[in-house]
Image 1 (tube, rainbow, N blue to C red):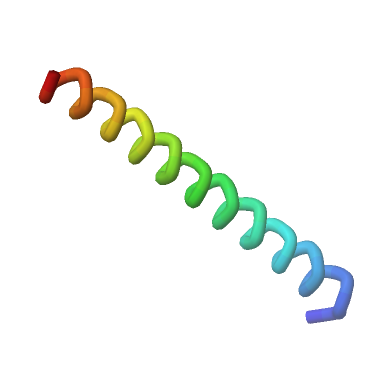
Image 2 (image 1 turned 30 degrees about the horizontal axis):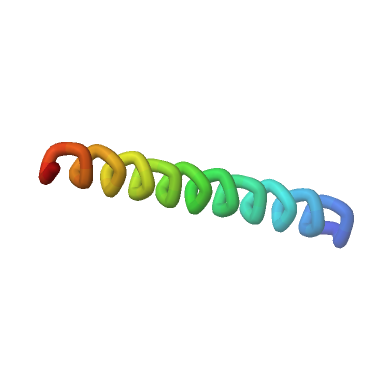
Length: 40
């Protein structure tokens, strides 16, 4: 495996992890907002 494909693979994994984390955080925010509304 040459260094170019290693770098490309690393960038892809990082992008996927960022997308996953962002989706997780926005889901949590939505859930918190909904539960606040539900509690009130």
